[in-house]
Length: 323
Ligand SMILES: [Zn+2]
Image (cartoon, rainbow, N blue to C red):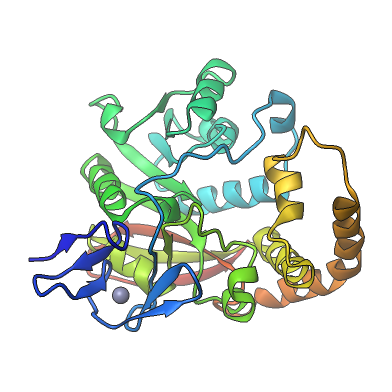
């Protein structure tokens, strides 16, 4: 009987004979890729040898003023939600962060809640945005029946035990027309294959997994969920290409992203490196935008996989959507 091993993190199964296997498909052929991950030769899933079970991060600026500005990503997420929703009872956002997605889309539903473990984000969501946010899915009111659950770049942060527990709870509490939307970095995308550890969405400090389309489908199938749609995001696409090019040239990982998105250096003044990044970004922007546009017609090209899953009733039709 397989059990989890702490030796390689919680994501690789240790078999009775001390061999290790993929936590998604059980394949025993695992190969080290780079410094942080091992890749399954069957489903392509990559597991992090050193990440903790779950990682708490403040991934967004926690200020109300910033929420009023609509970004391309906001528009993309709302379009995906509109395409996927089959009934408007209850929206659950797993890894709700600042509450930005929830607050901008709860108008489409009779009820909505977030699951978040970062204390600062929980406090902001509750006190400033008046959102219902729980620290764990088990804390949701018993009467909640979920119609849409979303994982916007949160599933890759969870240990597989946590992911399975949350997905199990979602399907138990799910309405008959349940939809589960997942957006994760795609290890089998051209962006990852080309840039490797320089890829914009490569983050071994917080990503327990790097999914492939096959490994994500397999994980969801354990919960009798089948992929019914895939979506392409130009916003994720062009920015991913731009930041990956910058990373390769400068050797500094995601400095521009950290400056803009997480505002990690807000106490610091703009330095020569920041100015250099911005100038270089301006030069690279046309090429990144062009490749981002070409992504639209090429399955698996962009660095992010966004898919919608529905309860499996024998069908597994998958439709590619460009939004
Ligand atoms: Zn596998």
